Image 1: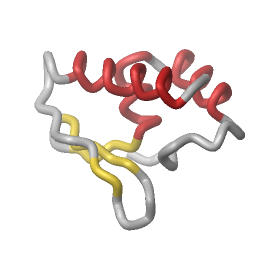
Image 2 (image 1 turned 60 degrees about the vertical axis):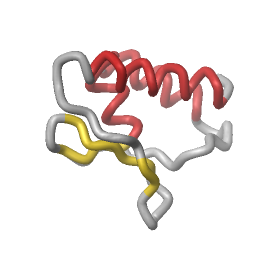
Image 3 (image 1 turned 180 degrees about the horizontal axis):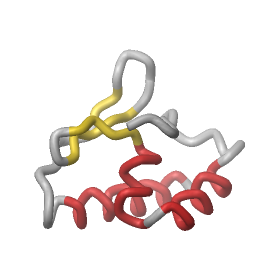
Length: 79
């Protein structure tokens, strides 16, 4: 999966989530992890994707991104 494909998936999730919840602008924290406020919670990329696309698709995307040297660090598992 290319960086461009990943960014398309991420931004589509943010756009769709924004139709039903307040969504802020993504930013990169000091530790390098990109986060975005969705419905009052700061979520990492993985969490944003999972919230919109579901766990199974999010896991598939994560597997495809492993080792690809993606542009942003992912944040998994925390809410």
